[in-house]
Length: 121
Image 1 (cartoon, rainbow, N blue to C red):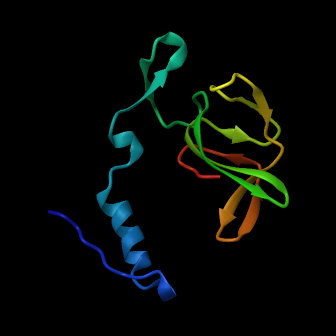
Image 2 (image 1 turned 60 degrees about the vertical axis):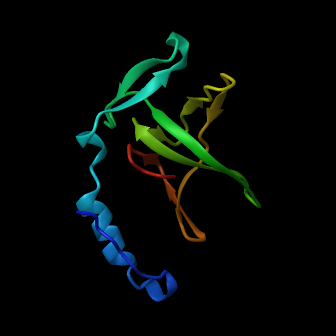
């Protein structure tokens, strides 16, 4: 069984059935074991639970310069991002303060105080 969807973003034709299909046919993150690699322990596999109560695991996947300053798009895999907290960049070891967290809606920014696992901010 291979689901096939057709549609167009023009006037949102077929977009909602596509999103419903993603929810129906793709596994939830907790249904499949996922692993991260711990660089401090020789890239030892560490299970990713996807729970908000565990330590933060997030990926910054896009950087964009805006009139408001640098905007970093992040996907939270585990834990919580909270406004005012410090996070560590594992590439250079520097701590960065989260002054503002926003959720993007096309060209609009919605201020949020926190983001949990599974969210893109």
